Image: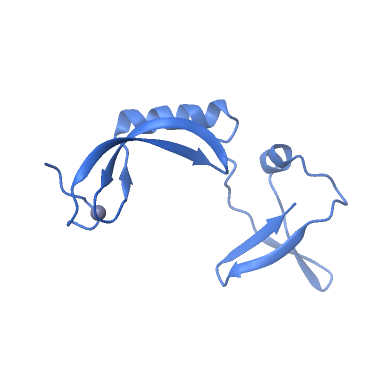
Length: 109
Ligand SMILES: [Zn+2]
């Protein structure tokens, strides 16, 4: 019986779990799920399947690094073309921006 790599307490049990990225359902995949901390581990073959599903849905590479720029006395954050297309953003569109924590900024369309 395999022991969890993360908490080293729970046992890993093979389960089929639904997997989503950016709120888009990608499918159901085999995972080893810890009975204690509930962490999910995917083997290499399953990770490849998830990557393929991510690419098929056009979600691959949506998460990118960007820099904070300056426009007068305010700051702006540039968005990649991929994100603009995925979210169908238009110039002049109003969005709500608020911090979820000191480390996370939410932009709501
Ligand atoms: Zn665990």
